[in-house]
Length: 386
Ligand code: NDP
Ligand code: MG
Image (tube, rainbow, N blue to C red; front, top):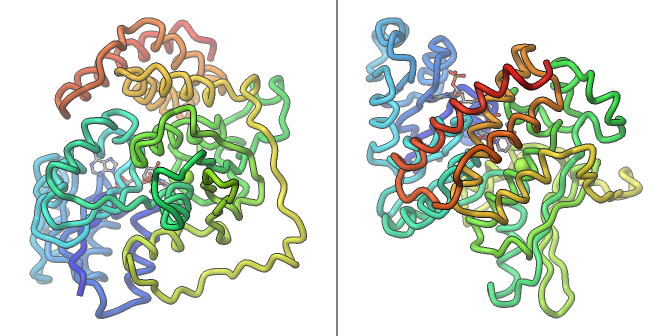
């Protein structure tokens, strides 16, 4: 039995993790679950999965969670310290799936000797990648990538030693605006941007997929996770989302990770690694698909991607600032307070306004840069066109 803790249990990834667990009764024991605000969903999941501990980040939600779990024997807690407590409890594997930089401190608290972390939260690698990787190494935690592109690359990497890697390529679906002109995208609404063609995900990453910021964040994620230089990383638009990531080797061979787009596939891979779980996921039928297509990323129409690539190349705290400004801008877009291109304008303006020379060397340093960038981005919201 693998003991498992899920941070971000009530989200899109968390619910898919629960689906895989329920399909394999007796194989996993859920130690702890943590969520943000949705008490009812957390309590229901804790009951269904027979968790030992449930934590909700909302500090006022403690009594409601305790009463929803009354009589079950499941312990509970509320507030950020309860989430950290859930993260640090003795377990074999932690799924890191809180959205945004809010996942950084809990993910760091979850690093520990002899355990594994399945990492879905990419923002913690963007905001504090070097520190996070060093800390995982110091603590002796094995990281398994749950993000589909990185999971594909992780699997492809088993084909040869790291010294034989020439290039890594992430694919992007292109999102809902792949064929839209700049003018059409300028007027895109929240509803338009939330219509992802291939994946059903949380709102924040869905907007990041529409701007292609998500692919830029993923380049930075890969840069740290696989210790690969920025020049060896690229992205290609592949609307079918069947190939998720490719590794090119020095002899010209290329190994690609493929599956139908379903997050349960990389989730199951991480949960059972190095075993494989049987999963009733849709099977790849190449004849039915007929063809797979590819396009270059258009950085004119998708400036957020270019900003992320530049932040990766600049290093220091540029990715920390990029991530913070993007979180502010995406939240404002979702609230109807910012236009679609306002997102990349706010991110560009924040990067210009801040000194990004030094990479954060602790959670505290990363969160201090994050807070300053949020203040600047919030100020820019007023001046950037709605
Ligand atoms: P969701 O918005 O669906 O879920 C976010 C989760 O984080 C919820 O459980 C939410 O709780 C919880 N949460 C939010 N703030 C806090 C906090 N301060 N403390 C504790 N928990 C908190 O996001 P997704 O599941 O879509 O994405 C999660 C992460 O995984 C992101 O980093 C995303 O980039 C990454 N990812 C997602 C993919 C997907 O298919 N969805 C694919 C690849 C990567 P509540 O709902 O209760 O407020
Ligand atoms: Mg991805």
